[in-house]
Length: 412
Image 1 (cartoon, rainbow, N blue to C red):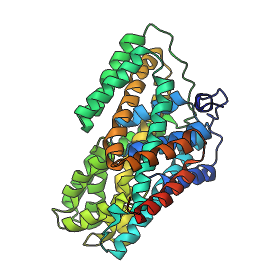
Image 2 (image 1 turned 180 degrees about the horizontal axis):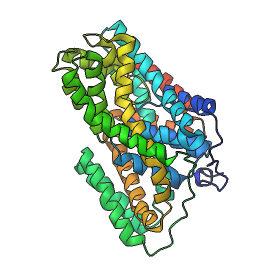
Image 3 (image 1 turned 120 degrees about the vertical axis):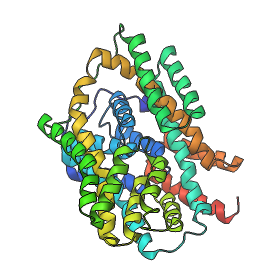
Image 4 (image 1 turned 30 degrees about the vertical axis):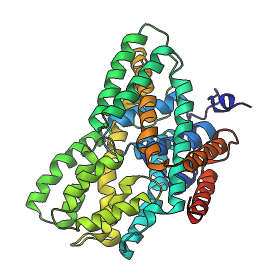
């Protein structure tokens, strides 16, 4: 069977919410242990495991969720994971997806903070370089598969290429949001009179009163926590407020969050800049979302609460906005995405998403991993294992880590 035949979504998709908490937890825990390479690579891992292999959603539904989460503040890959969990097993499924994807790296970084030793040499470790290279293969496979499904004609392929060019030349979070907005307008203009693909309703069983309550809680916390902090100088409240504000206001996720976090924790003297940089280096060596860096910060900062309690408060603070925003918008998004005009706009937005992923494949994925011909050969091997031999991504990640370690010992 060809790659095209194997990757094309079929009509036998498991889109109904009949999964279990434990099923979603198992799938996303494995992803939490194996998803190296940053938020863009995470989208590739999600697509391979959830869309291609398990067929919980089709390609268009996945792209719609990716487009939505690109517009929301917070960690986009984690938001997409939570959305996939909700689509599979309801709100508990979203919680299971977050726990499975987040806890492996959060626990690892918390333990590292307790050890509080430097991470000398890890950035040059062969096994870590192997993991960065396999991320190239994972993202390349995702871009190729999504492009075939979401950019099937000249207009959408052109939108994707233009979006990639703009994203490369204007690599800021605001630029990404503007690209998607303009692509949506262009898609609405080009495709509004055409018959767009049907968008079956996702199984997102979130009551609208709960969604509206989440919006109310989000704004109440965003506006109220700073006021409470003024009247009640409690360190736990200050910590939670700082991390909640970062999770609420950062667009683009990933490395964009670093300067915001640095301004919240270093100037007040909660930890030193050297400790901040050391923790960031450790965060590069673990799988899963970069936002789990908050667990390290919450563990090591002074004064109390710190340790495990500080890690939990920091994680809850930085991730709670994502949960509230998703639960608040998904029921309305599920209805909107079935409307003809919105489908036309999404045709352009989804093409732009492919372009943004293509740009990210080069910077930072390719430039951070491919430095020599042997690296490119390594990436081709990983791509072949994924796309031709259809090995599960976790196994290819393990093989790549071992091969990277071996090449490191041989000084390649």
